[in-house]
Image (cartoon, rainbow, N blue to C red; front, side, top):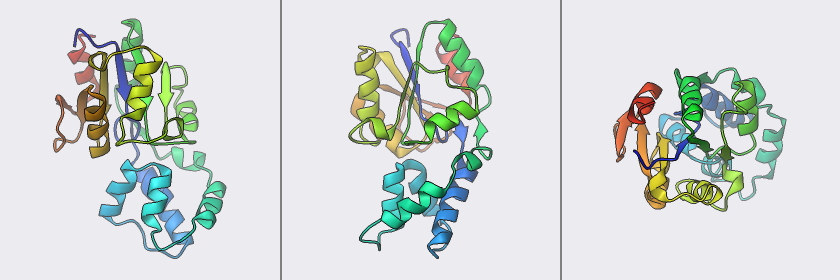
Length: 206
């Protein structure tokens, strides 16, 4: 850990508990097109996918998805943000990281909703870099987001610590060659398995 210069956070499932908001959002979308609500299996998938990946997964019967995207444009995600729950200790950890000179970043498969989330929770100035699925050619499980952050700050893989909660996060960390913390998911292969932000702080001796 002495080599670590940047700590990178996934959004959904790490920075925030978004189970309820994601389920509400996609269930409303499905209901509009007379499709049943998300199954547990579908929920796990859309939690990991980018929006594009989720829509393609949920509407495999459609040859074109223009009508789905048109309806989504009318869904105001800010109306769903209030259902998100920030992970306890996140702000304390972010402040401590800044004090100690660490680079703080986000690598998320969200696209155009990330800015609104950061603004809603007063986190706009809490990160030196925010990389979404819209900022790279390939979203997670590709390592592109982590590689972009490494390139941006001229970091080596061993200098970056990534915190994620899904198989896609695990695969991205493996592809980039970075250290990986599995957050609240003991089934993943990781360097560390943590359930609280305070454990991340303790690991870095903050």
